[in-house]
Image (cartoon, rainbow, N blue to C red):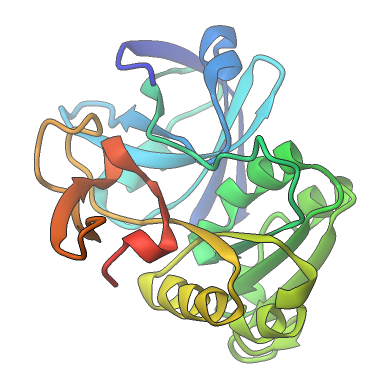
Length: 252
């Protein structure tokens, strides 16, 4: 992890939906250091606060960040223009360990979809990707995943695009085809995925979405309950100890 703040140049900015933005930030040093599942802590211009944004992809010397406007901080970030400097601390957190060659299904829900792109890219074309969205208007990054050559399954809650249902529906059908599951998205989704993996004896890793203030483990804003080896509970920081945890470790 790198705790030094550095400036990047915003070389590309696109709208994927009216509220979801795609930033490409140029910084060769940080790009080389970044791994699947890690995140950047982005300084909001004119403020002292930062916002955590998952690393969507790394393309040469460029880090790609895809985020949704959810409040004042991300709204201000969305107003940045190409050519401007963006101050970030990155890469932060512990990402997905994909060093072992295992058949993996990557699952993203909503704004948990972007970090699955670099994860699947790192793991290779034998991966399976299941992405879930609220409806057709929220679907993002389809073409990016197709370019990886992975098996892509997409679902929507209301059936307006792809499979009608939740990501757990196709997962239940293919769970015996894979060795490992890596997921990022809303907590109820992660909980259900963990239950399915436990039932079928599959290795499962979840990337938790949590509010973060410092991003480096100095505050208690992103504490999450986890299970010790002796069965008792304790707390860990999502920013420092995560955001990726073994599913069986997390108290949902």
